Picture 1 (cartoon, rainbow, N blue to C red):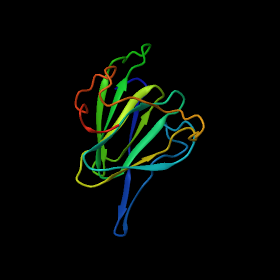
Picture 2 (tube, rainbow, N blue to C red):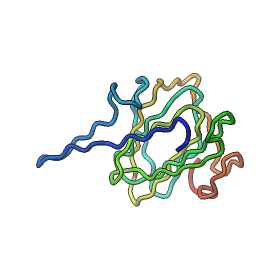
Picture 3 (cartoon, rainbow, N blue to C red):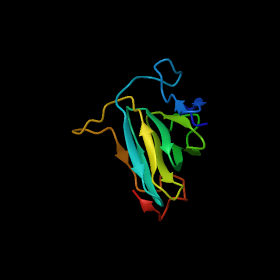
Picture 4 (cartoon, helix red, strand yellow):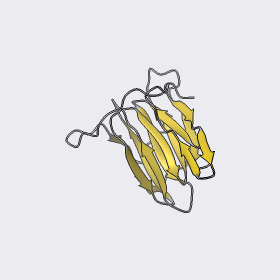
Length: 153
């Protein structure tokens, strides 16, 4: 596991009416602080690709569909420097994936329908000075070949 990345398996509470699952609680081990909540939709066949944050931790939960979150540790001082991880998440594998600052990440839709990613980042999005640094899918600094030539950014 990449240093600082955490995975929380969601407990599903089901009864005859349906189900409930708690995504993130203030008493969870992975909880740092609350910035905002948003949902990002990714279309079939697309990748919402490489980016990282210098300050923010992301807490991803794929609430609809199936997706693959790919992580790359480009932090030279990290014990897991150079490591790449794939996490297949979604309705059949409900987890929160906590991604620390400076870990490069992106998501690929693995299904035939839109997938919906809920994120609870630790910081508000700053429209004037975003803490978001994007890389191309074929950026040579990221040793992941599967997204090269794919639709996405």
